[in-house]
Image (tube, rainbow, N blue to C red; front, side, top):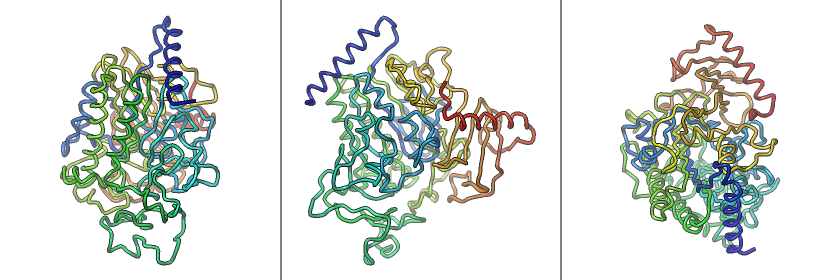
Length: 516
């Protein structure tokens, strides 16, 4: 089927759906753009209290929409949050859902219901542009020089333009649909876990050549003066500059929006800002006093502004639901000596909360969360609890698409809360996890928060210090209403509440689902 034929079919399907469902007065098919930042903390943008830098475009989004004070992702690292956002299922229920290595095969398998497949079924054109980090290819992993499938196109996306892993991991190439563009067959791309030859330059053997030094871990193959996790050779014509990533995401997103402005579309804009290595474009370098981490936040804000300008130019703002969120909380030193800690000053990346990336403290998963739909969402602030995992069920409800009983197992329909409807409620509880483990959880239920650790130590809770492990009890209990920073463990004072939450957490895990 030609592109034109597919376009006509989508327009017909969307129109037919509207005609059939119009008598209910509910089904709507706005364009949907989900902007997911990477490692952005609750306190990293000015509309959430940052004073050491300014984010005018994100602030405008919040001023024109709904700013949530209890907006969450479901995990404090990237792969599990992205998995749960797309599938509507907690990542701890899946396999291989921890931080994906460079050669990871596809984690979300074909046939899995996702936000993209739900909206595709409602007649939407669908795209993911930016960071993927959910694996590509069959059981043996990606065929970098051949067809990269299964991938996004097998789970509901019509097109993709990707950073295949995450940029501190190799390889530094794009993926367009099923292929790496610009590959030279005479210079094949190889990606592996072991040093390909004794003289292969690494961040250890050629440390004095690096333009950004590493602090821990990120010391294998060097590209663009930066050493990464993993090894690769070849594919030189296909490689990109770190500095150009944000521009490429905006360029490809603008193309997609322009191509589909006359039909409903879903765009997952998956930013890499502000994940390490933080190398913003030269025009953003030095724009803040916080070093490259702050400069990358400003670059992210620019991306948001460019997307909003495109909607305004095409007169689509009043027919587009925009969701702004982050995949997890902040981290300062995450493997590179980029001055993030030394230049942090008075900035508090997690805002009033403890913890950040890798932790189940509030700072790990409570992040900026904004919804805007001009003329539909009344501007304001909401204290309702919502999570990125709820997008699947909520958007299915918006477009009146059925959810199979065995899909989106933990996604709640909180559409009313997302749209700011009067008396609408968000979710009443949320399970938070750290990475892919099954042993470290946080359960927020109302104003109470239970931590469960199977390990005897966990990451520290001070974002402004280098990552370190500290001893921890198996269970901790906090009253978020009185102690939002989770400083005072009150489990001894409230044993009955702790027992009830332990039982609730065990039931959610054992039941295999939490969606009614």
